[in-house]
Image 1 (spheres, rainbow, N blue to C red):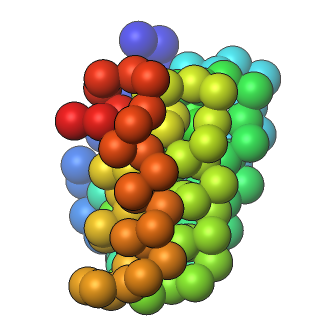
Image 2 (tube, one colour):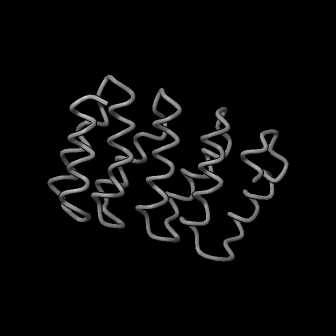
Length: 141
C-alpha cells in the first residue's frame, strides 16, 4: 500500500460519515490512472458519505464502467450502501451489472440488489430469477 492508499484509509477513519469536503477529496482520486488508487477511493466513499449523498452516488455510478473489474465490483457495493431503498436509477445500474462478463461483478450486483429496492419489488424478483441458473456458483449462492 502506498502513501495515497494509507491517506485515504486514514481519512475515512478520522472524519466519519457526512463530511462533504472529505467526500470531494476522495472523489478526485476516482480519476487516477492507477486502478488500485481508484479501488481504495471507491471503497472509502461509503465510510465518508452520508446515505443518499448525491456526489458520492454519482461518483459510484461513474465507476460502474471502470476498466478494472475490482473498481466495478467495489462501485456496485458502494452504491448499494449509499442509496436509499427504492432508488430507480440505482436499481437500473445494479441490474445492468448483473449481466457483467465478470462473475465477481455479477455476484456483487446480485448481492447489492436487495439493498437498493423495496421489499417485494417485482422487477428485482424477475432479475434475480434469471440468475438462479448463473453458470458461476459464486453468483448463485
